[in-house]
Image (cartoon, rainbow, N blue to C red; front, side, top):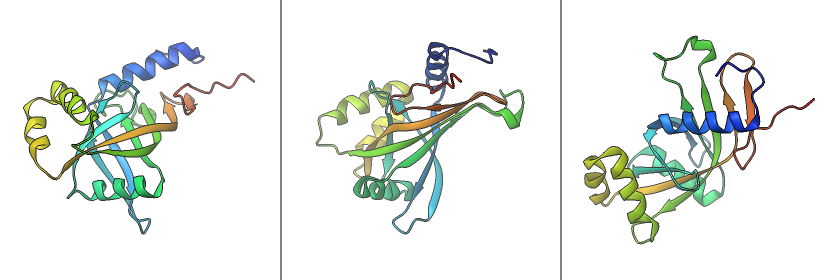
Length: 168
């Protein structure tokens, strides 16, 4: 899409397609001392448009996500266009959100259905990882965000994921 003045519906559809194309995200977290960490993780998207990650408790980003859940602070995620697919590296398509964090333990009813969805997308690896006792599900619920689709084409997103279009 090259439309410089897309409608809200066009942007919503484009963002949905972009999210569907991604298999992993970049995760930005901080620990309890405020030290930042960036990492990457495969994800699925829940029916509520949340990001669902299966991560080991031993990973530093998992420890940081637990801190965010306990403190009520946000983590951040970014989805990026593949470098090989972008026309200009300076105008690389990207979608970022601040996210609230919730941990889903094995005993919770959502565990099995989310694991099944992960298996559908990523195959047998999920069966192995989910059988290991140190893996948990993390649900990252997008709050406000930003979608950049090129030069001069940045759109802030409201908490419901709708683009905030400047009408003035």
